[in-house]
Picture 1 (cartoon, helix red, strand yellow):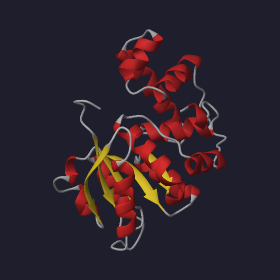
Picture 2 (picture 1 turned 90 degrees about the horizontal axis):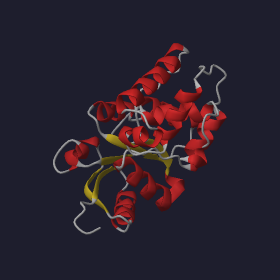
Picture 3 (picture 1 turned 135 degrees about the vertical axis):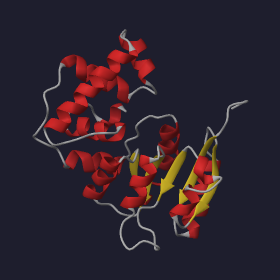
Length: 219
């Protein structure tokens, strides 16, 4: 890595063995991922040094909560944090709810080291990541109320899903960043108009897969 700074993460889980295991996986990753804080409650993500971590790995069901931690997820997303939901729950609707709330991806704990490491790196680089369980949940929830997107809108959308920034999309297609934003805004408006809002990149990825605009293995 040379002088490059490592990716930083905070891990929230109420099982000490899970915390230790995840910390070990991330520390051994290439590039290395530095776990700057861990905790059994969401507080660890809000206080130093966890408040500065690039990625939050969040267990959705904490023993300190009476229900699923949707509220914590929403508050983190609203604060601009990049959150990976990492949970034992294997529920299609819960996965989609997390994407709608702004999680960058949804991982089940059975998916293990490979996917958690890859998802953390992708989240830090502002790229979508589609693990098998989430891809299955999205495919099983295919929708018929698909908005009509122009070929250019579909092209920009597909390029954005596979790029780290809108600047890269603009350079690859030969348009300006402002035009990229215009196309993406149009796509979001069209989805909102059919009752399927997609305010985040992860949610828009889910909508596109549901509608067959992109395959999960293309990401």
